[in-house]
Length: 128
Image (cartoon, rainbow, N blue to C red; front, side):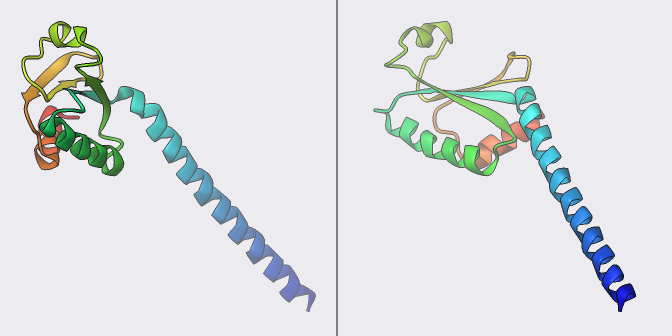
């Protein structure tokens, strides 16, 4: 009887140790993802809330952020709230998407609406 109790206790403890190991392993992966987010490229969306194509881009970028958070950091500039950005970024039309590598060097620029599929394809091409 004592052997069965001892064996049951050992199995329970082994299961607990295994479960804790899995939990801490997953947590360390999350920590690595958070740490590596600093090494991501950046997509800067230059647009406006009053522009129909920009509003459509907002939906695309929200989907990108929600479903692909580890691909790229997303930032937005409203051109009518930050008017100096138009000339300092050399933006001619809105929306404009500017892609930067992890060293903040511009590596690609797109003007107009850019679908999620096109953005993901471009990120693949750029190695982001």
